[in-house]
Image (cartoon, rainbow, N blue to C red):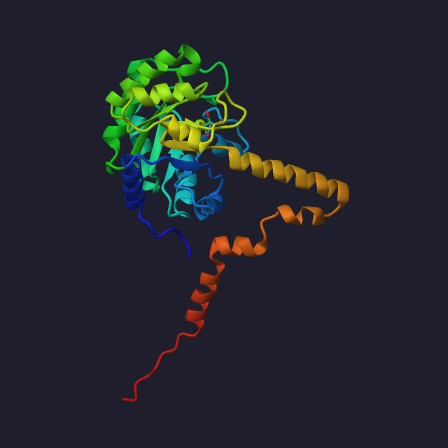
Length: 302
Ligand SMILES: C[C@](O)(C(=O)O)[C@H](CC(=O)O)C(=O)O
Ligand SMILES: [Mg+2]
């Protein structure tokens, strides 16, 4: 009932433990708090909170228009509905190194288990689009050092994302990944890898977990969890997939409503009211009310 029981520090500790044990963890992107519950119910290991989804949710393109306040607010709403660790997309960290430091502390306070900071120049764009630019190594490292120094919980996972692959190639991505690890990154997110071999090369070059982004309609082929695990990847995100699926279904339903005037033919695709109530733990709220209404004061005789 209400929010998750697991304290943020515990979620972070568990995440660290599983990564240290060499497990591969799957993080589908939650497009709202309710979908985070579904991800948990279906047995995934974590929840991803995407900047692209957060922007799209507000009707905006993913070009760095959202603010730290909006991102942390949405992150908190999602993180508190699930017992799973939630990791969030912090884009370029919302400014200079000092801003990155504040970003990390704000995201810690919001109950997130970790965040990734990328090395794009501002204004950033989707890592799978052409024409993006990256900052020089010294600027990229300063962002990560600031993030690592600022966190108060040593288990908060600082993931360094590098977008350099699409600009300067794989060798540059490997060099940058190594430098980011030296600067203190707990994990590496090599963006826009072309194939499994590239993931394998990055994973072999660094001794921290590597994250694979399985976003659709991008530059990477879509690999299975098993393929990625075999390539040495430990964290996989499907950042926008559930939003794409939900929006696709919503569009088809609206077409049906236009064509047929009702949605009877779509009932089979809908989440049933009973399943929604299960996910919301509706029953527990009923009991809570019952206890309130049946509460009685027994007066002693004297
Ligand atoms: C992972 C990502 O940063 C996101 O915001 O979810 C995006 C995803 C996307 O736009 O498909 C990205 O830059 O890859
Ligand atoms: Mg993003």
